Amino acid sequence: MFDKETLEKYADVLFWGLSTARKDSFKKGDVILVQYDPAALNLAEILYRKVLERGMYPIQRMGLTNAMEHSFYEMASASQLKYLPPGDKELYQALNGRIFLRAPGSLTHLKDIDPSRIGQVLVARKPFREIMDKREEKGVYSWTLCTYPTPGLAKQAKMPLSTYAGQIKKACFLDLEDPVRKWEDVHAQATEVKKWLSGLKVKYFRIVSSSMDLVITPGDKRKWAGVSGHNIPSFEVFLSPDFRGTEGVYYANLPSFRSGNYVEGVRLVFKKGKVVEADAKKGGEFLKKQIAMDKGASRVGEFSLTDKRFSLIDRFMADTLFDENFGGTFGNCHLALGSSYSDTFSGNPARLNREMKIRLGFNDSALHWDLVNTEPKTVTAHLTNGREIVIYEDGMFRNR
Image (cartoon, rainbow, N blue to C red; front, side):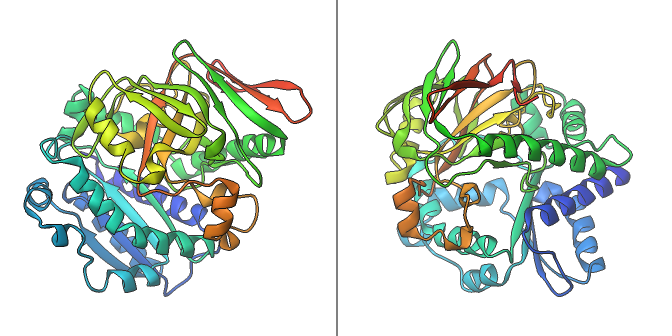
């Protein structure tokens, strides 16, 4: 779908993302995992070569086909669902980088699978994620990911495959002569926004649109993160709040595909930091099962805002990576149920142990589900000195 020149640019942007996301510099001898869905093989081949060119050790892993994945979730016994392959723990303990190429052949092939079975797998594999989180906090590991266009994605987004691929190309600046330079410019602009937001002494944020009225409490020892290289593309600026201070109504007007299920029109009511009401126009039962996955699945792990001046994404892509970075006419905010991000801790993330996370209100869960709102909205910061500042309106940050 992409010609060789575009693939080479995409690979260069991914290496920019991987390097930008890591606190320490990469060096020869580092171990890099190139993980990819079958449809993204041609991009994986280029990345594999580029890892070798840098004197690092590539490890490649191709994901399951749709048929394999369906067979696993349909047929696996309880012990097979929770089985952790030998060697995986040692691999993750040795990784210095991971590039994941998402290229799903279908978004609905698991729609007949009980979501609780998928949840069991996520919970069982959570220790692997914790290993990588700790390595990232120490500065010895980073990750990035992207989406490769497939007929399955284009079908669900209701556009021709060529148009879908064009949207990815435009959003990632692959149509420019030097996309890496453009990403560096966006990174610099977003860094100024993050510094401004992190410098405000905020008691709580209030988000108001025609469908929602929500209070988010940032909590102590927080900073804003985003445009860090972790996701290609990424234009969002986000915070992992103190989940205990979440109150009010949140509404996601963009649809969402998750674990083979289509969910639309999600409405959540929070009281004392926990979802007490959850419904959806479509996929309501699946939504409720996800929220019941574990104790933290009904709490907020992330609050995010995207400035429409950064993002060229203006169509529903049926892919959270793009939809959570929607620019369009009014930008977007999104709320993630589930796990929080330690890189929004203002201190040294390596010192953020389990006890500190609990004390500061960082959420813990096997779930992380981004739910997006693209309505016109106003976000007001209520400062600790009693003042109020509009920080986001008309899809733009108000720092300039």
